[in-house]
Length: 273
Ligand code: ADP
Ligand code: MG
Image (cartoon, rainbow, N blue to C red; front, side, top):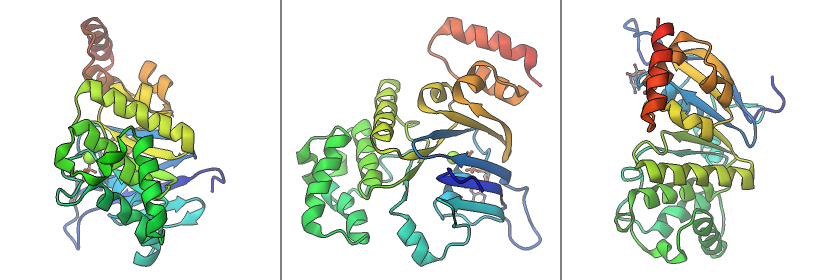
């Protein structure tokens, strides 16, 4: 066991099948760690098993084999009650800031829920909500408004506030900026990084977009069909990818600079399998 790891997956496999009709494993023998204050990106094309891994960590999908440890505790088969307690420490941020917020609830109602669930008195909750809204860059009066009064980027800030409010230690970010415009993406990524520096939260950062990870991640795990192809420091994997699949993925990543894009395409062409 890695003593410093906040999250450790060991030989994790997931198969969605039942009985005799089993599809191929959606995730196969994946091991990784996330340390406090670290961002580990899970990258791979659509269907490579990224969300499945995030959902196992969140307790939404069961592991078929292998284990999940959080802060040294084996939570692979944690029961419902323990899982509920763990939501204080492990929180998600999903891609869709429209779908993930309840339109009929004020922001305050959305943010107070995780606090009350973990026994915080409602008097203290008001202060905590104001503090968290400020940290994510929203005005205090946002608390009494509804989700549809906000832009996409602001809604993702609300989703981040909801993830933060109970003081988590690990956040599973599943394509947190994929639905946003490029300029807003950068703001939200910067916000996530700043919050991490302030609080030492670990991020398991899921994205199909390799272009993001140099800025957003410390380490990268590249997945293909549920298996780990390559893993290493973000700068290293993006600048000197070792595996042909990673090279092809980089060549396919949209890059705003057309010169850079041509260079990457030319590079990828030589090494594509
Ligand atoms: P990614 O997030 O990388 O796009 P997913 O983890 O969503 O990949 O999917 C990995 C594989 O598992 C895919 O083949 C997908 O069709 C399958 N899968 C995902 N969720 C389910 C589910 N709830 N039931 C059955 N198969 C699923
Ligand atoms: Mg996904």
